[in-house]
Amino acid sequence: MGRAKDLPREKMSWGSYASIEIPKRYLTPEVMEIVKDYVTHKDDLPDKNTVQFYSDNAANGRFEDLEAELIELGIPFDRYTGQDFDIDPETRYYRPATDGSPEVDVAILEQREYGEFVPVSEIRGIIELNPEDFKMKLQEILEEWAPGIQPLSQWA
Image (cartoon, rainbow, N blue to C red):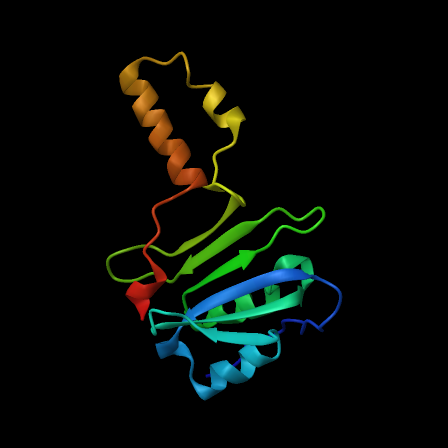
């Protein structure tokens, strides 16, 4: 298994909290060698099928180079960015394409106490629609801002 080519390596520097969760079955020695360059802590999660890695010093609350390498290798992950100064909390979901479904790569903004949210500006434009159009437009908005994503545990 090779590394993503021509990607600059991130150095540990001042940053924000981020965690990344990966199914255990993908954590080969080669992948662990890549992951250890970016994270400072590791926790086995209660479901025993995934591992969460995290750092309090991730650049902009992300592991951009690590995420790019995982995508190149076709490894699914969930990355959470904690709120810090001007960084909004978000979760990035990556699922590689399979025979039955297309690739999913989406970052969803969150409000810490309430979870995912849809911007009010998206909702204002549909208030006056008739019920059929309202439902169709609402479904489009949900797919854009909070799509249904296969749980990471299903990849374990």
